[in-house]
Length: 120
Image (cartoon, rainbow, N blue to C red; front, side):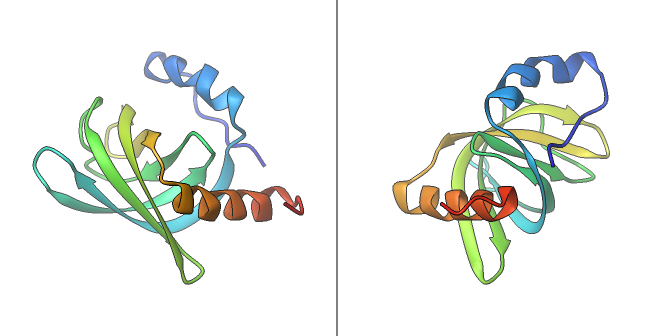
């Protein structure tokens, strides 16, 4: 099931990206590392797509922050570089994946195939 976000000006930029890649509800523990400061933060994903994810966090880093995100699910993990593209203060942030290694892409594809019910 695709996740819908509340209407807000900050989210309009994500509309076109979100439509290119269906987002699926996906609850999993995450670790975020801010690239510039090497600061580590914990969070929880609430949705996932080929292009990015939404992470629930009380104090998300600002829009534009370059991050490494690691998602842990079902004894596997997925790691990618990304950028914060929108922030809902005290709620979370939207992340676009900017660099995904081939082996990590295989993990992501498997999770999304399971979520969509397809037999890839």
